[in-house]
Image 1: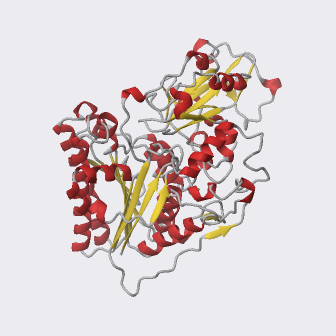
Image 2: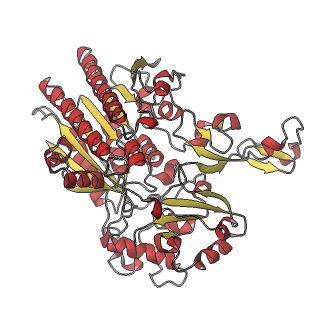
Image 3: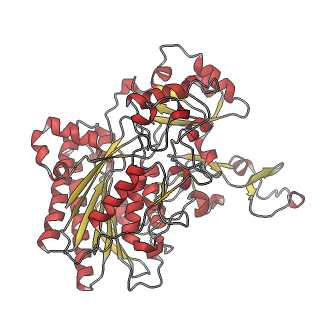
Length: 564
């Protein structure tokens, strides 16, 4: 059987899709799966109803504008459908009105399938809140279609390959309508992306089966700090959990200097060779941050990768161009130090290596050089490396078959995202890359079927793309910058959302200056300015209240981009 889900991000431009391919199960295969607990609201959960109504004078014009856009379908809420906002005042809306499943629910289903009945979230199995009736249906469908007893599960993530991209390609190349990706892209479910709908946020939700509010990665280059400063003592050296009393604080002239005095706050980037402070160019670990300071949830795969009983667990095959980087090391649940970056640096070689645990196999493929994007060489490299990944997946499953072992294979490719960032969605080379990816995925599925392997293939994107003209770029005016100590506007300064970190005491002034901008200002006409409390209460980061450690990363004034 087959199924498909379309993922639509909060930003109207951010759409991704998902489908499953299965070998038909025999009559001896089981349909049962762990129960999905439909729980009532627990402590720390955002309520979907309120004692306030939409005319509450305490609500800002911006939050009303955001809700109107949700109601009209011009923006997509992470888990609420437009119907939710079209059912009268907030106080009259019910928990069952217009809820939609999210990428997080796919991640939860995958964790259950791979880890089996041992997986737990929030100490109580997978939590599906009482308003998540469609999410419950989605999880049930995925788990039933794949089957808890499926021997081999293959998960393919094509970065940026959203439904908008596929629809555009079909309109330009009608023959693509018969492609493997389109044939299996049944749109029975609309699966929303996490917000912000960017790669580090989505991949961390995938790794932890949790919402951004829970795992704490809410964008690129996040402003954070560890510990508390005291007069004359720099760099937050005294952590909150250290137990150090203020009487023991002293000035260390050997460590207090101009460099350390400016390093209390970091700009945290997780998708890099090492988890880095982009402000200083130093590793986060060298500034006193631990992995627990970076990620607030553990990856679910750790349950398998660190299992002492390897006989009954799945073999884990990880195939990408970034094995050995800090982020893959973390989500693969590995403590071993495997930092051979020759394949990643040269963007040429394909390497295979294994962890100290016999459970984990790493297949490192090459990555396309940036200076070849737009050339035939860049397209050919991208497809050859993806082809290498498909070959590695087939080889890994063949090895498991010889040893009568079950497996989970995770293939990640940075394409077509990498091409689209450089060339736009409508470029011929982007179309060519997607068509070749489609051919390789179909080859993978054909070989699995021809060998009669008991296997399922799940393919998804993390987000989507639209082309943005240079004329659409907006600069932040000086009168606003004067109120800020950090403006997080995306990995390259081209974000569709921003986190504004206001200087202490200037939050109200920042909002006043925003409102006083020229009525024709592209900021006023294309962005919604919220307080962090408004974004949280509206559920943008998920249905649960964020951990206290995550709140500083959200800034004081997040913005949402929309199309008027």
